[in-house]
Every structure is written in C-alpha cells, then in structure tokens.
Amino acid sequence: MTLENIKRVYLIGIGGIGMSGLARYFAHLGCIVCGYDKTLTDLTDQLHNEGIRVIFEDREDWIPMSFQTPDECTLIIYTPAIPRDSVIFNFFKNRGFELYKRSQVLGVISKSKFTIAVAGTHGKTTTSCMIAHILKDSGKDCSAFLGGISTNYNTNVLFGKNNIVVVEADEYDRSFLTLYPDIAVVTSMDADHLDIYGDHSHLTDSFRQFASQIKAGGTLIFQEDLPLMSGITYSAHGPADVKAQDIRVADGSFLFDFKGPDVTIKNIRLGIPGLHNVENATAAIEVALLLDIEPGLIKKALESFKGVKRRFEYILKTKEHIYIDDYAHHPEELRAAITSVKKLYPNRKLTTIFQPHLYTRTRDFADGFAEVLDMSDELIMLDIYPARELPIDGVSADIILDKMKLWNKRKCGKQEAVELMYLEKPELLLTVGAGDIDQLVQPLKNALEHV
Image (cartoon, rainbow, N blue to C red; front, side):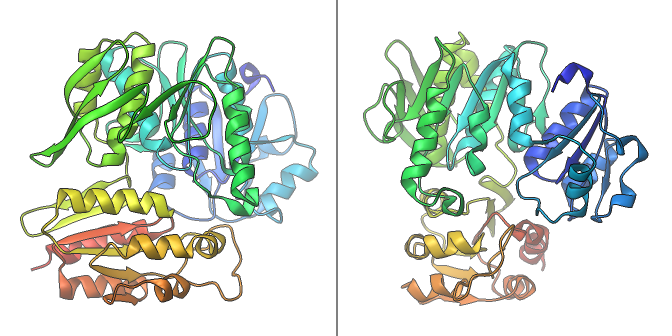
C-alpha cells in the first residue's frame, strides 16, 4: 500500500473511535471517504456533518460505484470487531480487494514519522491526549490519533505541521505490534482481553514485544510496577526514575510536584481530577522533557488540559449534585475512578451505575468487579453489554452482584435506572462502563436537574 496513491477510502465499522479517526485523516488529505456502521451515534452524525457518507445497513447495493473495482487508488479498512459474515466485508473480499486492519494502516502512516506510541490496558487514552495537548499548547506541535474525543479539541484526530505523531497503541488483537515508535509509553499491563490472549502471560509477552520494537536510539517509558526490563520508570506512589510527589487536593483540583533526575517542576495543577491521572501526567511530562519542551510550558499545558470525553468527565457539578461519567470497564479502572471520586468528595454518599462490558470479561473478573464495586454506597447494576460477543451460559451481571457484600445494590434496566434517579436524586453519581451506557448520560443529568 502506497499512501500517496490513495484517493478513495471505505471503512467497515467507521463509527468506532479509532476508525473514525482514520476517516477524518483521509478526508483531511482530500480523499473520498465513506463507510458502514451498524449503529447511528453522535460520532457518526459528526462524520456526516464533515462530509463523510455513512450507511447503517449491511447491504452491498449501498456501496458507491467508485468502490466496485479494486485499484491502487482505493483503500478498504476494517475493524476486527466486524463479523466475518458481514455482507459488505465479504463483498470487498470476494471482489479481490486487499482489506487492511485499522492497525495496519496506522502502522503505515506512522512509519515515516517521529512516533510517540502510548500503550496500556488502561490509561493510554488520557496519557496520549495529555502528550498531544502539551505538544500543541507549547507550540511544539504534532499530529495525533487518539482513542477518545479530546475535550480541548473536540476530536480524536489532530493535524500538525511537523513530523511528530502521537498514537494510541491498542493491545486488543495485538494491534499495537504494527507500530515501531521512537518513544513508547506503557501505562499498565493488567489481565484483559483474555478472549484474545487466553491468559495474562500471553498478554504480557505482547507488551514486551511492543516494547522491543522501539526504533534504534528510541526510549521506553513505563510504570514502575510493570515487568519490563529497561527504560525510564515513572510512578505516583513509590520510587521511580521520575515521579509525582507531594500529591494533594486543593479547591477541587489535584496538585503535585514532578521530580526527575535533572528537572523538578513544583506545584503543577492538573486540569482534570484523579490520582491515576497524576500518574498519567508524570509519564506525559517525561515525554515532553525528552522533546526539549520548557518545564514552564509543560506546567501551563497541564493546567489547561480538559481531559477526554467519558474519562472522569463532569456532567453536572452544583452544590446539590455531582455527576461524573467514566469509560471504566475493568476492575482496576473502576478502582481508580471510585477511589478518586471518594477522595474528592469524602463526605458525600456515592451512587454508582455500572454496565458490564463483554460476557468473557464479566466471567473472568467477577471477583475483582465485586470487590471494587463494594466501595460504593449504593450500586445500580445494568445488564451486560455484549459488544462483539454471543451470550455465555451462566454468565450475567448477577454473578457480580452475588459476590458483592454491599447491601444497597440492585439490578435494573436502563429506563428503570433513570426513573430511579428522578426519585432518589443522589448527591454524588458515577456512571461507568464501555457499552451504550453513555446514552443514559443526558437522561440522568435531566433527572438530577428536574425540580
């Protein structure tokens, strides 16, 4: 594939966060871009408004005529989440098109650039967005492919005027092994995606392989507790090469000092809350220092960083009600979110609404989910969001509920949860999950604001 020749791009699964970023990238280059997704969302609406045609029925007769015959000017990209019996997927396959995974295309785009790749089972989206914002805000500049919608820029792809690109490196389906970065950051390596990897050791092996693919003369930055061999370590809770110190909360914000071998940055006020985000910021600072960005500019950028949509995002913040929404869908992500909420608001009763994501993840981590969700004062459990999976006998959200010790817990449907919030009007509400729980955000906000 030669990117310079590409004039037409079709994306199967265009509504995904990574796929939509590629759609916007090729549209920015002047290509004809269109695609298919099964679900109409705010993101697909945005793509439509940007001149990118999206269809929502898996029918070959809706594929434009210009995409009927393979040639060197046409690129077909698909997401691994697309079922192999998809009509559109098989249309292109049977017509002789070469189909590329999103990760393969990202690997080709980044190959000729100075690449900063951020990997991790959690923390990678916020950290990559932080790095991109520091580079943009400081005037260093960059392009970026992000795994979430940056609140500062209201997009998941940024375009720069230099050769630097920030990439979120996704471990799912071993996608990040298409990347050969100059700087790699690894935030976490917790057991996850066991439907793909089988066990934690195979996932760990893939992260080690990713770390080994750094270009000659490049740098690995990784969280101190991770079993990686050589590089720069960082931490917000213990000894490391670079670390966050004197972490405190003042006026609803997290403040800390950055301490490295040669640089100390005092009184950094982070624009987003969360102990876990202090640690993410520590890694982002080290990347920026490696790129010779002045400490004062780094400090200023972190203060103006507004975070990522659905990553500890404030939906409502009044004297009566605090409502935070988060994408957390793994026990350790939930632990980080709930711990941060309780640290910020220790005197408020916490109501958590959780939607499990995937049958396999629910089955594999039921004990972990139960332990962490027990930290809430009240729990409302939704049904499992299946995503790409078929049901598994004996696996439901009840297996988490049954293991929990919290007495104030219940399972209900999405509409029932909204109606419950109209009645209860909790003073501190947290919604968590990676499925379609985001569709409840506005209704829940309305419930809390309703007089």
